Length: 246
Figure 1 (cartoon, rainbow, N blue to C red):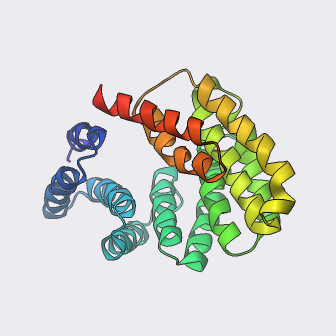
Figure 2: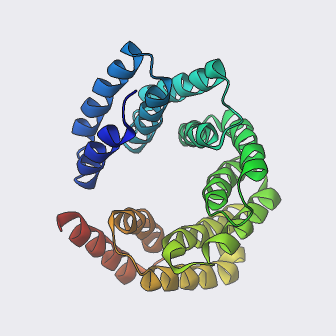
């Protein structure tokens, strides 16, 4: 059986440098090894990581193919009821959402939600990641009330611990974008501005300035820029760059 650390340690080194080409080569090597040795656990891990890389790089066909392979493997092995497999399905659903397959994404998110809520403690922050991603798809589908409910639940979870402050910031910005989509920019302004303040406060308070923080800064900066908070958007970009270079 292939050790997960052998795959993930080197992968993390490539991703810390944003070297997606090297990360892809690394994963494709281990995908072949996993299939040759019939190591379904390693194969599933690799497919899940490939989904994320292809999604970030905008490679639609490759991302969707990795998602379909991952789901098929889960069904074949019969582990869809397990939390680890559900997390891979969450990644697949995020791929579907990113490339416009909203109905497929929502159906898969609902399956993941049933597993998480049955198997994880209610306070587990992994629920928040699911709720955030599922709500984004629901906004695309016009299901605003359900999306707002999930965002609210995500905020409750992420605002409990300082280390989850970056995720809380993302949730606040998602709520702001959802309010604008539902109500229009002018009607939603009174709701958006406090959410931007709240997101900014979370990013300032985050105790850990690591690769994940840099990723969140890069993700949030364009949103702050869009809403006219140019100086903070520029500061987030600078923070991310400093972390990447360290």
